[in-house]
Image (cartoon, rainbow, N blue to C red; front, side, top):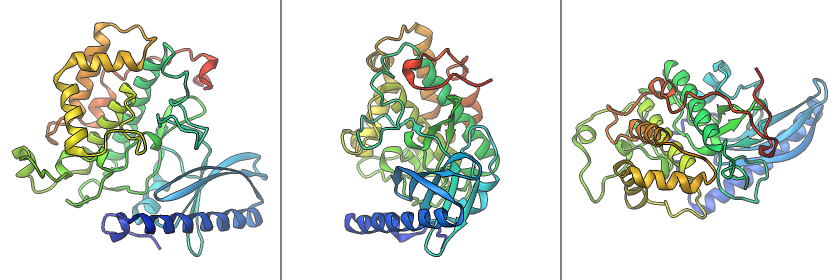
Length: 346
C-alpha cells in the first residue's frame, strides 16, 4: 500500500530493520521480474542499482525490441503514484507505466545507465563522473555546468507544478542517451507547502531551516519562521549537489567521506567556500586539473553557489533564477570518445 513517507515512522530504520527491508526488496524484485517474464515476455538482463526505496533492474522488451529499467518498491507514496505519470519534461525521467502487484509496485522506465554519483566504486560499473578520465578531461568542467543547468530546469518545472523533490543527490540525476541530465527518483515527491517541519532529510543535504541548531543560535529568519516551503529546501539541496560536483570532494560518499555531521562538517565547509573565494578556486583547480580556468569562471561559480547556499530560505535563489544564470548557460561541447558518452542529438 502507498505510504506517506513524511509521516512514516519507518523513515529512520535501525540497521537490522534496514537489512530486513533490503532483503524484502530483493525478494519482491525477483517476483516482479518473474511476473514480467511471464506476462510481458520481458527478458531479465542485469541488476542495475538499489536504494532506500527500491531495486532497479534492466529487462528487455521482446515485443518492442527495447531495453527497459524496472524499479520495484514496497514503499510507494501517493504523491509518486499520482504525479510521476503526469510529469512530462526533457529534464524529468519519464515513467512509461507502473504496475501494482500484491506486495510491491513496479515502475517501468527508459534505461539510463549513468548518473552523477562521483564515488569511485566497484559496486556498480555504470556511473559517469567517477570514471577516472572524467575530471582529467578539459571538457569536464563545461559538462558539469550544463548538467547543473539541466537540474535547475527540472526543479523549475516541478516547482511550477507546486511540487518539490526533497531527495536531490548526485545519483538521482541520470544522463540520457544524448548526454543531457534528467532528474529521477520521485519517492519523496511532495507538495511545496506540505513539507512537515520535522521532515527527515539526508544529513549531508539537510537545509538549515530543517536542522537542529544544537550548539548555536539559528538566524532569526529561520527561528521566527512558522512554515518553510519545499522549493527552498530543494534549492539548498541543489546547492550542496552543485558544490559536490564542482569540487569532487565526495561529500555524499557515506563510506569514505569525512562529511557526516551537518554542524561539524557540512556547514563549516559551506561557510569556508562562500567566505574565501581563493579556497573555492583551489578546490576547483584540484578537481579539474586539466581545465584552463579564467577569472570569470571562478567569479561566476562563486556567485552561483552564493545564490543557492544562502542560509536564509527567503534569500535563496529560485530554480528559475539558477537555470538562467550565466554560469550554467553553456553551449554543448564536442565530447571526445574517451568519455564513453554520445554527442548531443540535435
